[in-house]
Amino acid sequence: MVARDLLGRYLVRELPEGRIIARLVETEAYAGPHDRASHAFGGRRTPRNHSMYLAGGHAYVYRIYGIHFCLNVVTGDEGEGIAVLLRAAEIVAGESLVRVGRPGPIAPDRLLSGPGNLTRGLAVDTGLDAVALDRGALRLAAGEPVAPQSIVAGPRVGCESAGEAATWQLRFALGGHAAVSRPRPTAAFQLNASRAGCGQR
Image 1: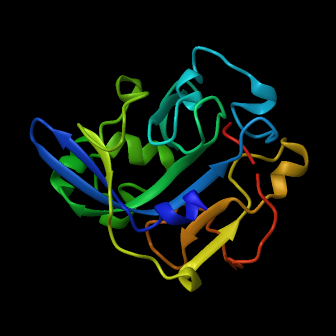
Image 2 (image 1 turned 90 degrees about the vertical axis):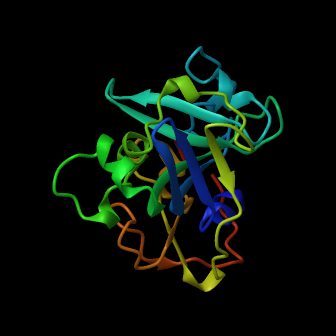
């Protein structure tokens, strides 16, 4: 529910040089200890994932492949280990600031497409891990509502080894939006879908 609700909301990044505002267009849900694709699978706790167990509304930032950072919104109660990965956004304001972290001839819609590109463009690293997202240098704002019929869903990216969780339809995006990362989900999301749950590799 939260992964879908985050679509259309604004992610605001305050930098010394100015403000970036990005509208979220793609997310992935990670359902906690029962989700084989989640960092919290089996209740695992490590220095890397400690902030995933904070109360909902905090950031969980981790490094992947030793190179990229990924930004998640913690969504569960304290101790649950539930979060939503922010995969892609469109720029509303501050494109010139985004291009500092994403130099080169990149189309505006691709600047924040993909979780690693999103964090580079917004200058997000583990220094922002565990921050509250209702205030400060990185925060969520109301944004623009998204019609349920405009949402598409599919399996999460990189979860192929997560057993049955590999097929869970927990990746959500605005259908046809140019900023959605590839491969793009294409199935229309059904509001009565009952399956929940895949992971953060």
